[in-house]
Image (cartoon, rainbow, N blue to C red):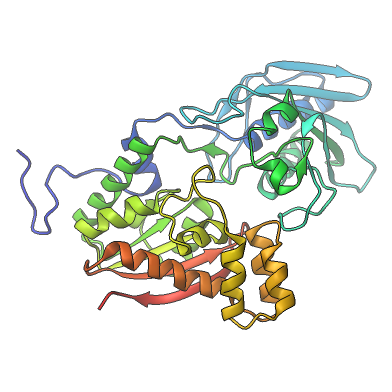
Length: 385
């Protein structure tokens, strides 16, 4: 039998906390994002364009420093362009794009043009505002774009290239696969999005991930932490670190499972909890949802419109929030008008959290961010009295 420690955590609780510790304790195999696959394919294609040979496997550097290698599933060098293809491996995550073939065709660009992105077959086009890309742009998100720019710069430096290229990303059967995603509803038409903020797909399994959250709380308590942060992803985790300087074993990879964090802390309290996440996800928590996954809860624009009204929005702005394409568009519209929708969502999310925590001695504050990691709403710590 494990020996009990003074704080109620058994002596068997050892090991690493934080996201990496949670992933290991979940027993699930991580995979690679479409953005990582597109970067690998681009690296191979541009190398071949400059040298005449495709590196296979091709190695890339991810935003957190990992250097995975990808085998090529296809290559072509002809007509002044090079194409390389990579098959996406999503690990143990039931990702609709697992097994999809991601292709990058690289062509020389005009001198001084830098890197220009094009959407090929199977990659969607942005048709509505409220996303982190302009209307008319291919749905290749900002972090994958930066990853590919960095890869192009590295290849150019190694092989004497100019770095002026046109990159066309395509995904086999992407238009068909996109029907199983939220892209059509978001106004991304014709295919999939090229996504990813870390390059790594965190595997999704309700039971395994909830158990890993519990282990994360246990590790934090065993280490004597008095402040933990439940984060919806890597970007919000960075914000929590920047705001509070929390060590890794105080970071809980909450993902979509806000309820799992709160219910476990109700039984095994830590004096302070910061909830940090994307505005849209935390607006669901504000509305009373404890599972923030898109298949089980949705952003309620009517609820956001009512919050905006209580914050001083006029009838025109209330209508604009109710008709917004995304939560991000709603909060941006309110910020421009001086209505603190982000803060109101943070306060309402804190209220939901405290209701779940009941009498547990846990003070809660909430930080809402946009996709770039900019804080768009927050509230001060408060506890149930």
